[in-house]
Length: 131
Length: 201
Image 1 (cartoon, rainbow over the protein chains, first blue to last red):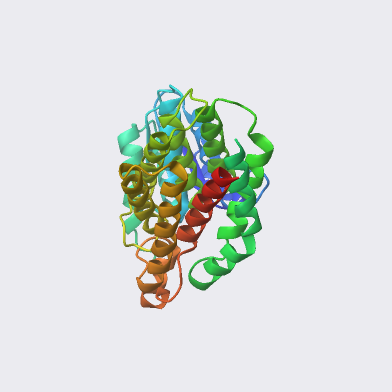
Image 2 (cartoon, rainbow over the protein chains, first blue to last red):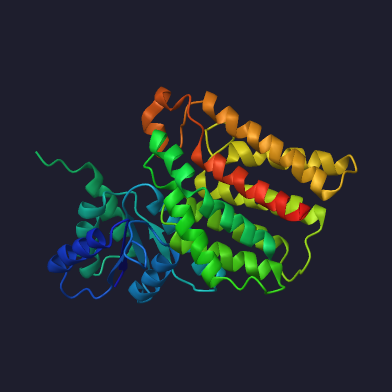
């Protein structure tokens, strides 16, 4: 099953989005939060993201959903760290809103969608109208 | 690695100044974030390790994890890339330092997808690297080359007052970012000056 990592500056946001997504995809055990810093401060941490990707990966790859500002830079740094340390994980960052994208990705992943289709579902949520 | 220690203490000393600059055009966290990161560097990095490349790699990894804002991956990558240049070495030659600065700049550009003239740390670092390399080529020693680099970084930081931010949080301000110096260019300059002052001791 394709793993999902939620990168937010706030651990509360990351944990909350995971809870929400797991409700829609209860059999998915690879939806992993990577929010905030170790001391609970607001921020993003490339090492924390790297470890979350390793935890989320079951061999089918991982999609990262990220919030604002440095979250994308930290996610890209984490991907390089994985390669530097010799981990072979197929991991991509979705260009998608973090809440909607995660929910769409989780539903697609739990239906055994491929890495490509999970990424596509996450990114398609970008254009969804709410009203 | 007394240089790293000096860099860390200067950043920590300038915490409020950097945060104040960031309050004008950003999210008022640059000093707080950088000070937190360099405090962690002082705690976690073994400054007595003679393998300078390993020290810089560890410092970079620590910054990635503890700074929190965009400066974390940017400076973290910069230190790690600089460390790769001198992997396994215990001394930094004048040429090594030029190559380290060049690698750090390339790392920041890759990470931030930024170029010169966008009101970022690159506006201090790129002129500093050019000045350093030019001075060395004239036959100057490392301290004289670092002096030139620091003057160029200072000028580059002054120049950031005159331009509009197009990267990072300050870009939301558009023209209102004019008149304020970039916090990232400022912290980069402080680090170079710490390095130079450390060499003069």
